[in-house]
Image (cartoon, rainbow, N blue to C red; front, side):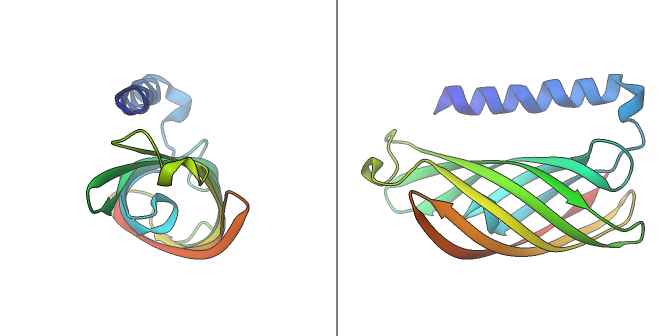
Length: 159
């Protein structure tokens, strides 16, 4: 579990340094948010950025946990998303894969896949910079041959 966490932390630090050094990445919309439910399942903190400009194709990376008695479950949501509109209200479509790991090295006795898939659509409110960010979304959740509905809400800040 430590190696997954360190890899994820390293990926965020290297990406942040690259983003600051790369002039073509300047001017893109970046944000941080806290999420309840959704692709982080329990609680998660996420970084979101556009690849170019203020809308269009982007990515999301996060780190979260699921509160369960006697065990800690760590979640790592990684996704690709697309937002539309040049105003503050956006339509969002995203595909996220979330990796699960736990303090005992197993997830539900290894009976369920440690990777959950979340295609979803939703509403995002955000201005181009230095403002409140809000998201609400839903869709199906796929894991181990099972499909269930899910939804999430995020509150954050556009950098």
